[in-house]
Length: 319
Length: 319
Image 1 (tube, helix red, strand yellow):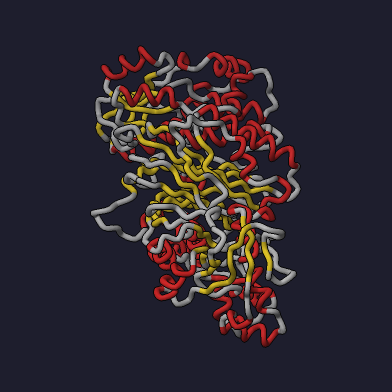
Image 2: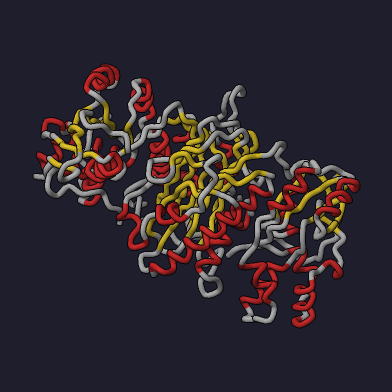
């Protein structure tokens, strides 16, 4: 890792962030050698689960919409969501920052604060990272987790399973639309876009009930269900209803004439988990996770992989 | 990880690269679940060693100087060098690509080829990655390795140790200068800049001889020795001589009037290993690694941390 102070401009080293990381129990210190040496040495991992994500200004976030704190916090949530979707516990996060030369120091500081707050929220160590000059602000995040038994796969949906999500759909996409239209009356929607949470709590319930097929829906329900259908070799029949729309989405659709079903089906940047399981398992899960909704069922592949979605449903696209 | 094909523009998914990765022995498959699912699951790691690096156009490379193949190959070498410096074996590499919208598909293809060739060279799996739009071409690389016993640290140099490097110094910096001055007569210097190799071979010898203090010199000898001196709480006395300059560096300095000592001391982007050990150990190492050079000695801290370097020696700076 690069620790050349010249590379970090005026923003201080990534070590600034390392120093602020939340104290961990002395019984379990995942980072045995922290940033500063060439590499970080972690405690042994029986099931290392690794994921990576990028958040880039103008593509994934806008500084006129989101504070640096929110950008940092969300970057961690988005990255760790893939660990949650893998039923893995977060161990260490590595962050490469691309910093524009003229970025005010206060912006970098607040970004660090957001990263640090999210790491604390999820009980994840900062392993290290790297900073370099960039024409746009960017974060490349690499997360290391520890798998907890069998890793769920998107290829393991079975005909006869029900298709379910761990919480309300479409809120983040509606929140994005609120930002685009300068609509401020629906803070719950803005919050869903700006401050998503990785659903480790829900993942733990699914894992306990031996759910075999799960993923997050960062590309939106239709997009990610398409991946699931393709990988599992099944067809998915949806039965979304307007009654499934959360209160804020329903209210906003009522005020704007937008179609809630379209937002629920083609939302994006959502970090609820999509999963498939048999009806008995779903009943047991619902008792522990009241927000769970059944949105369709899994059938043997015949004809189209997806049916029952609004015609305009499409995967979320970043610019 | 993001597998939305819309994110990848015309360049195909990172899976293009995954599909091309070198076949591994069926006895040992570090990536048990490859890219495509939300995360990659690796085989268990007793000593997970993690490092990350960034290569960004205009800062770390220039496309008018380096082919896409060279850029991809070097990005892998540079990142894995930190594993070599940690005496760790490469296990899996994750690559986030930032791709400008108008980048020709052939450039991305050739970049992939360079990444793939280097992965094959080092026996490293591709674990997965992520692509997103960016205003400049960039690679963020994240490497997972398996430590091999005690990890060397830059803080473990002892007074009485000799300070050594595993090979010639200053070539890459001279190669960079050749590119800047359009000097084409010294291909060895250009190669040192464009195609550095991570010194896993040398690391294995150092590890076998229980060297406790080692690091790569990506910031140049003076810069990285400064880190070592500070972390170890010692002073370092150098005795560089013009006779230590490699043939190509000496020839180029002869032709241009440049000072070889200055390039040896303040070179950058070098991936030789800097290490400290006692004289008996050095003798044993030299028998197995003929390129090793003793460049100074470690003393108890007194006065300046570094002495005996040319006055202009400074750490290599990227723009």
